[in-house]
Structure formats: C-alpha cells, structure tokens
Image 1: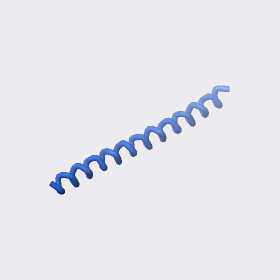
Image 2: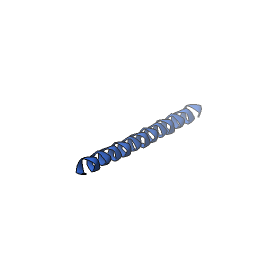
Image 3: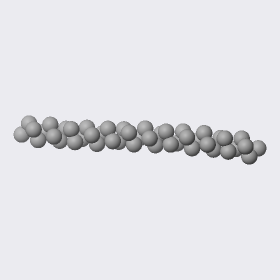
Image 4: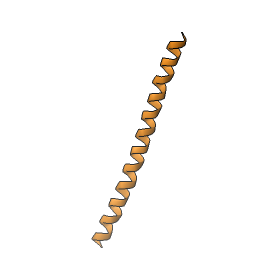
Length: 45
C-alpha cells in the first residue's frame, strides 16, 4: 500500500518537474523572441 503511494507521489513529482521545466523553457523562448524582435526593429530603422 505504502509502495503504491510512494510510486504515485514520485510520478506526480516528475510530472511537476516536467511542467516546471516546460514553463521555464517557454519563458526563455519568449524572452529570446522579444530580444530578436527588438534587434530586428533596430536594424530596420
């Protein structure tokens, strides 16, 4: 019983970690795109 509970917890934990990593990655992508857009607008002027 306890083993099943621990297994479930670790499963949700890894899922949580995955979500965190995804959110961080998306944030990083957005920042990178914003920087690229700014650079593009600077060169366009």
